Amino acid sequence: MLIMKSFNELGHIALGTALRQLAAQVSLDAELTYEKFGFNIEPKWFPVFYVLASKGADSVVNIAKEINHSHVSVSKIIKEMKMADLIESHKSNEDSRITLVQLNNRAKAMVPNMQKQCDAINIAMKQLEQDAGVDLWQALTVIDRHLRFRPISSRVDEAIEDIRVVDYAPKYHAAFKALNIEWISKYWELEAPDFSALDDPEGYILNQSGTVLIALYKGAPVGCCALIKMNMDNYELAKMAVSPKAQGKEIGLLLGKKIIERAKLIGAKRLYLESNSVLVPAVSLYEKLGFNHIEGASSPYDRCNVQMELHLSNKGA
Image (cartoon, rainbow, N blue to C red; front, top):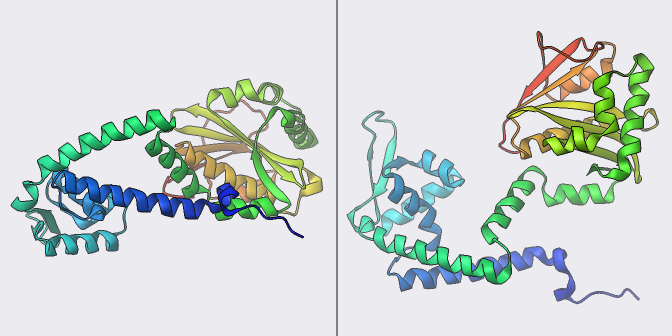
């Protein structure tokens, strides 16, 4: 007989239910708080109300961008707020095609109460942070950022597949070094920069705001890839290697996608890489990932005759 845990013991598996319950509690608290301060609006209107209170007249497009809502969602809220006699609209003086919306005098009179409410909520949330030992807003922001680039559904797929990509750990050092030596020594001799990265990935890459990812096939390391910080928002995609025993499984493509995903997550604006025209499959892979050929950059490697770059957008993976 299968022994099942009670629902309350499911933990992460019941996360959706827990979040819905938390959202319901927060919404109820918001309604009660609005009533206490005489700030009589629907809680879902607050983001739009706040933007208009702080910035003045603006377009639906700009408001949607500011609060990270869809155009349709903001348009619906604007319509509801107009029906509640809180908003007025007019054509832009600079472009008659654009309609601007703003708080009317009735709504503007509510702004002081809104500010008092915001101040009180900030104090209450700091008390909650002290009681719980968790900054709820910061935690939600971090989780949201990670899930935008790698949803739970993708993580579930990886958990049930033979091929997984994980972050570097000291136990993978030997494999990271061996995988790179294997492909480099097939065509060339290792150079000084190779030894710096391969002998000490923690000091040369990870401790310098870089990243190393390891591809596992049935638990064994068969591929790797690194991000080496160059300056500011520029990173080098380097040390990509896949064992010949694991080729044909698109592990290189998976590593490339994951490393680009990670680059976006850490705020990189541009990726740069170096290769050689002899490595036709590798160069083709980089092109498939969106890299473009460039010329003129200096290189510490004698074997480099291909240089490529990828400019990143941080709006999703």
